Image 1 (cartoon, rainbow over the protein chains, first blue to last red):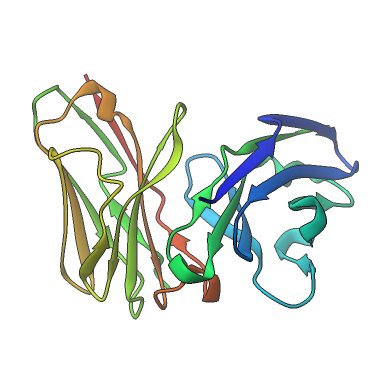
Image 2: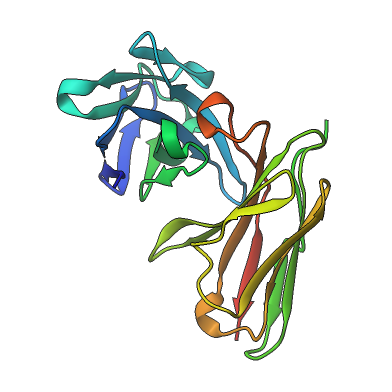
Length: 114
Length: 116
């Protein structure tokens, strides 16, 4: 079975500071990995995804994530936080042979302090 | 372009009443998903349709829940009778293709259900 663990339900950073949101996955087959963002009272929006190829993936709004197979991780980073980045972030995993089924992590709420 | 449209945005009802949530996917998308979001359980996939056919309904909690997709542009999620534990935000999402890895899911803004 596949699963995703997001470390830290809340992360607080100062504006301009590095953002690091952690995601570890469990999968018996090569995974496809995603980060979604949810702004208040809105649906989820795709930030970036890893399927195959380059392990460093760039997404929207300056976010990027690196697939590290040896560490079973897919952490999300952004060099400099903006106030507008305050939202909830979800890591998700799926697999090639049941690829419609996204398994979401429990989410990490990012707070950005002025 | 219109995104995924859900209605109602908010619904407050009393226990035992029937609730119907509606979804209009993005035109041309052939996959539709219903998710439920709660603090306790996070995001759960309830049911997945591909080309209007239910493919996986293993996430539907119990017989009180039913979902239909009579055509490519409309889906409903019905709860009858509703119970307080059904209180949640229900999201509809659509995508092009049957494989999440080849595309992205486009989510609606959700229907917040409160059952008193």
